[in-house]
Length: 395
Image 1: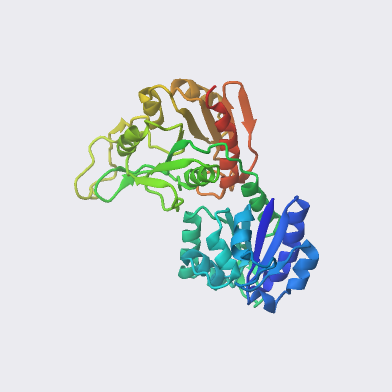
Image 2: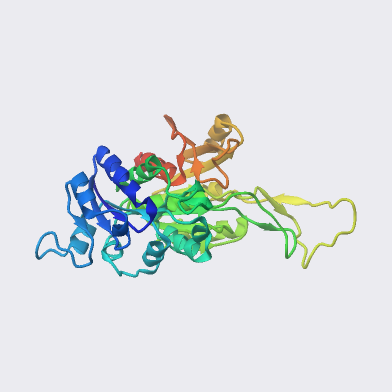
């Protein structure tokens, strides 16, 4: 496994040496590329001695005469890791500015990108930095969020380089992906649905769309052609995925039905509202009494409706069941009632997993299958799930 480690000009640059060593312990060949600013903190000799590989510094470096390093390294990379990633480097990566060897190499490569920001907390919170990270996430980059604490200048907040083990874990997650979905078409529903009460209010839920976005990123990394039908979610979906935006459960079903033909996998990760107001009010409901009675009617079951509408050859249908406990018996009933091939159960009662959280923990149920992912990032869970779901095709 070939990793290009990009080091930019943060005081945390010295920790990149530990990162390089840990990646090598995982069996990776590590090649390091330093920005000009990084060389104010660390030297090429350090990384060449540590990795046994040449260290690139200038956009015109050629360790092998006649072989353009920014192209050769880009082709051979299985992952590009930028750690630490400064605000300046993030902006260049987001906007495709090939102003040095690192950014030029990243533009030339189709390898997965992992970025671990490190900077002053105010710089990290700045709108321009967050906009750059949103763009990179939209291109399926994996962002290892910085830790909170006191930084070198004495300020306190989120901006410290993440622990080395977290960056290594993220890198190994993308390196261990397979191409099991190459040549397949994937349809994913994602996010919440908003069922209008009036023109300004709605009935909804806490789904952020992060799991759906992770499933889309993972499927793209594994070679699939991906379409996402998303309810109102602020999460960034990969730019390589086709995204259809909807609002309600009825709209979601209507958008999915014409996309069903030709799909190899259909994954229902959306948190679809079970009920909707029977008669939404035009305008705004005014406060008029101590109570307000609402009559709710049942929404269509999007995934079950798609399963019933599917013709041969049928896609593999995978559902999600967000439960406040293990919920396996309820999930088994869903598996049969909805006509699914598999269902992923996630316990949303725990802290730091499930709704609005970066991590998840899944239990996969399928005929003859009962397997738990353990707690992982949502991208890690998505890759884990796709590896297993891919094996259901043709069964």
